[in-house]
Structure formats: structure tokens, C-alpha cells
Length: 403
Ligand SMILES: *Cc1c(COP(=O)(O)O)cnc(C)c1O
Image 1 (tube, protein in one colour):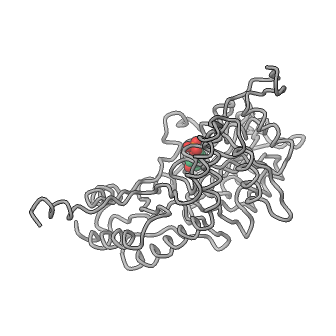
Image 2 (cartoon, helix red, strand yellow; image 1 turned 120 degrees about the vertical axis):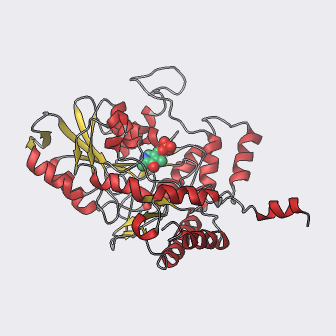
Image 3 (cartoon, protein in one colour; image 1 turned 90 degrees about the horizontal axis):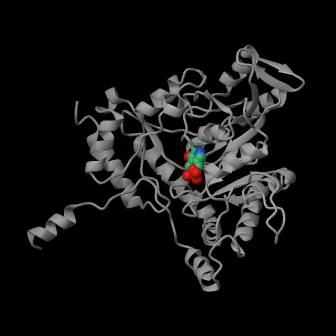
């Protein structure tokens, strides 16, 4: 081996954060689209994908419909429109989340109210919602209004972050008592269960995402899921330019081109066929991390609540800088030098320019701490045990190295 070859073999392969897994019928279904010329929004796969997705989410006592669309963000926008949320309304939403749900609230002219996370599982703290509704709102004729601003509190968007469900029973009880529509942002939590019930079927309507880093992907895509057939019809209508005649160009309101294409739906159907294997892989990865991290002081792994079956979408740890020997961002850079890709969690939305002026229940204190200390580790469905062991080995070897 000459020195050049040695240098090459010594560079370890990149371990990416979270990449798609394509190993099923994706090639076949996409080829079928190309072979048959059905490459756009016509063709059989959109309906097949919707039907299969609805079947996956439905159970004996809860049947849901599913409407495919262009992205998870589009799904959230459509869900808000279908729920009749508009200008003058306020919508409660998680503070510690990707920005999409808060942006969607703005698309319909409503105002987000941010709800801080609870420190144990990092989900929306439902007790803060309870206190806000009881102390600062007034209920008239089944609707609830903020006493100070006069705004109607129209809906709540629990974001099930990182694959773990929000504590939904107390939230659903509050929604009933105060007349709030529940729009689940289930974009990160396909496959998760709350007390045995499927996340995304617990509220009035839900949004899923098939972005490239999600559990399953269509490149970009989303799904609106609801148990109300009339809402599903309306979601289909609004995401199809509100066209009312199959031949003539007749439209009865301002609609959107939020359609998924046949090619994307073909890919989605193939991905959905692998979903149980994907979930099992995420679970295996989570268990192996939890075991390995137990021996490394200063790294606190995420934990599932007793009532949760987490989908373990994005495996995340908190870095205790004092105990570990470096903070989360130094660790991110040290891992990058080892060709291991990690990412911090989002900034609390109260720290994000477009939503900085919003009321934030709980002050965003927990969100800010999570943003400072959290690091998501490589957790692709296809992550090998060898690669995961390398991550754990590097994490262990860096511990205390900068003390
Ligand atoms: C991924 C994601 C979305 C939707 O993302 P798209 O890229 O539009 O599919 C919405 N909310 C959260 C919390 C997400 O993580």
C-alpha cells in the first residue's frame, strides 16, 4: 500500500444524520409512472397511496381519510383552512419545534401563541395551556377568547416532536371544554402511539410530512388525515385549485395547487410498504444508543414517557457541558471532524424573527435550554451497527478530553 492509499483508507466514511432508505418497490413504481407517461397529478398512484395511508392509520373504532399534498407545510396550511381558522384568530402551538406550523398559522392570517416544552420529554407542556385558558381567557357560547386581546382561541396544534407524542388526553379534554379544534402536527411522528392509539388520529385533523429526512419520504410530500369525511373532501378540494367540474374550468373559491404527483405517490406507496421495518430499525437504534450512552457521563438520552410508544424519529441527547467536558456545539464540531454528522434542535420559535413578538406561555425557558444543549445523532433507518458503534466509540473517547 503506498502512502496515498493509506491516507484514503484512513478517512472514515461519512455517517450522515438521517437519510432516506430506498430498498423496496420505489424503482418499480416510479418506472411504471415513466413507462405509462403518468408523471404528473393524474394516474393511479395518488389514490392508491391515499387509500393505503388511510388504512394504515385507521383502526376498528376510528376510520380516517387521507389526502395527499405537496409537503407537510401544505398539509398544515390546508388543515387550518379546513378547520375554518382565519384572521383575528389565535392558535396555540408548540414553541420548541421546526418553524412550519407557526408559519402555516400566519398563512391563514391567524396569530400563534407559543407553548413552552415540558422538560421530561420535550413536548408541548399541556399544564401551561390549562393555566392560560383558565386564568387569561373567557368562554362565551362555546368559544374562548383571550381577555386582553379579545382574540378567539380557535385551535391548538400539538407538535409531536422527534417521534414522541404530546400528552394528548389532558389536551383533548381542554379542547372539548374550551371549544378548540385540535390539529395534530404528526410530521415527525408517523408510527408513534399514545396509550396505544395512533398519533395523527387523536384530534380533528392531522398533518404528516414526507420530506427527505422524515421516517418515509416522497422527496417532498405531505398527507392530511381526518376522521371527518366532509373535512377530507374539503381538503382535497382546496389542494386542487378548488375546481368543481372535471371538464369545465369552474372554481368556487381561491384554491391552491398543493397536489402530489403520481411519481411522488408511487415512491410514497413503496416507502409505506416498508414502514414496519423502518420503525423497527428506529427502535433498535434507540435501544442501542440508550445502552451505549449509559456508560458516557454527561450525555442524557431522550426518554419515552410511560404512556408513549415513540417512533424514535430523530435520536437526540442533551449535552451537560460540565460533566461531558465540552458543550453541544463543540461536540458537533468535534464529531464533524470525525465525519459524523449531528444537528442541534431548533431555536425556540420565540427566538425566531417572524414569530418573536408572539405571546409565549412558560417564557420559552425550556425551549431555550433544549436549543442550547441538544444534539441529534445519526439515526438513519439504514444505519449499520458498525457505524452506530463508531458513533458511540467516538462519543466515549471525546468525553472529558477538553477538561
Ligand atoms: C418536517 C416538518 C414539517 C413539514 O415539513 P415539510 O418539509 O413541509 O414537509 C412540519 N412540522 C414539523 C414539526 C416538521 O418537523
